[in-house]
Amino acid sequence: MLSLQNALKSNAKRISVAPMIDWTTADFRYFARLFNRHIHLYTEMISTNAILKGDADYILRYDNSEHPVVLQLGGSNPAQMAQCVKIGDKMGYDEFNINVGCPSDRVQHNKIGACLMAEPTLVGQMVRAMKEMTDKPITVKHRIGIDTFDSYEFMRDFVEVVANAGCTHFIAHARIAWLNGLSPKENREIPPLRYDDIYRLKAELPHLFIEINGGIDDLTDIKKHLNHVDGVMIGRAFYHNPMLMGACHELWGEPVPTHREILQNLCLYLEKRARQGANLATLTRHYLGLFQGLMGARKWRQELSGKGHLSVDDIRRAGESVLCQNGL
Image (cartoon, rainbow, N blue to C red):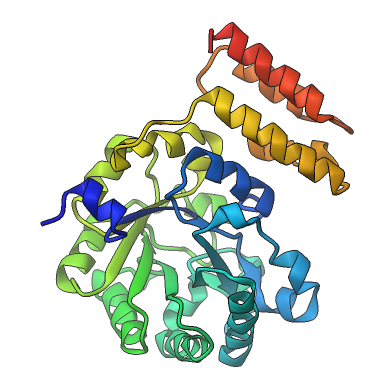
């Protein structure tokens, strides 16, 4: 049996940053990669309409340093999902993921997200159509149930139908989604976490790659879950405390990057973005957690927030102040 370190190095197990609308943009993903070269990064959910009717090159842009990077798609039309995979495949994305987990009523109206758990046959049709366009993995991110369809058997049946269509990798958020009555934020907090259901899913379907998501926020939790499933996906904890991604280097037996290294490399990236004409003040919201837990972290957040304009020198000075305050 592989050790955890060897399993991670061979990709038999993995850690991922969850797709988050408005958060896992290209500018955040570059930042995230500075903390850990192994973690799988996901785009925010991108609808098929946005890609097929908009500027796909701009919407799907990413930096080569982001690999491995996964394109998460929102849609329910198999032909349109397949066409988006064809476009994303040409652009070099490493995997493609179907969103069957988002509980927002904004996407339900377009038959996107968690509501699709009620239609496993349709999800299977999407998987088949997408697989015809690429040799790269097609994965599904889902909840453990929706509304009153909250039994373990409901989730297992969903997974089995979709697996029969050719999907072998599932990312399960360990809460049900209430499609009516709860906001997306409440759906992340109110339904209880049921990790044991996902452990059971892996035990009963050992041939599938099962990744767990929801309420995981420290290295101890990550190690615990990797004893039961194949992967761990984390969203807000990585976003708000990105050094947790750095701490994960311990799992690969590698040194953790320093705050100074991260700041230096971030400034190099921001210099490039400034040359491209980006308003850096609109990007810095992604970097507020860099010094989480250190003296001066609040001042760093204040310096980077609510400004109409910021230069790279402004950002560098604010960061150097925190580093000096902490003797780093």
